[in-house]
Image 1: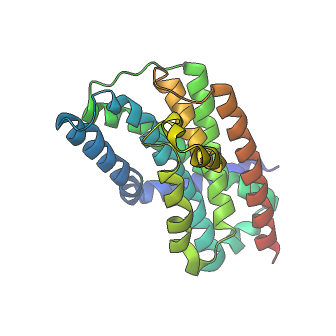
Image 2: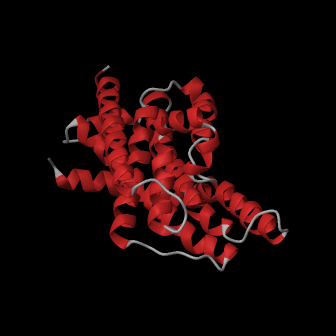
Image 3: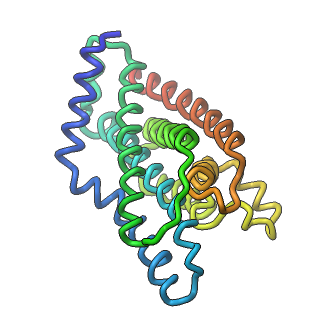
Length: 254
């Protein structure tokens, strides 16, 4: 592989991200921070939620920020370049194999997802303090990287599979249900009274992202086993990356 070309593609994506920094920040953090403020501060200080809920909420908000950022950072440029600007044609002429173009987009999306997730911690701490966090460094690093890869790979798969007229449908029919049934605002164990639903939501990869971050940031709350989370995230990462790269190759040669 031509690493110089790969680095040049990454540098270009980084330049575009810096140029659209304000838009990216608003898209990434506005909704999660609103949820943090309403549920973690207003509801807690009003007495409708226990103080411990602030710590329970933080991993879910981090998972949402990472997934939304990774999906948006990869899916929207892919849709635009293939169906609007046709800019992808210039990239396909670069001295690099087509599948490495897909890998570069996933890597760039992972970086943005990691930044979005890690920034949530100090921002949420400022709004919610005090927040009780007990970080498992190795587990947290592993889960965070796997969540970032899942979000970027999911963005590639969606971006290469959705037509331009279905972009809104993608977010309303795919991402919105993922959030509400992704254990972001409640632990998976809270669904014990809905046993059928509790089993069904396990097909949602956001469940493992939320539960994994919860288990490595605030392990005092109920959460899925970290080993099970890592295994599930690895499965979804490989599956979505395979689908995304296959779809990218098909669109590139069509």
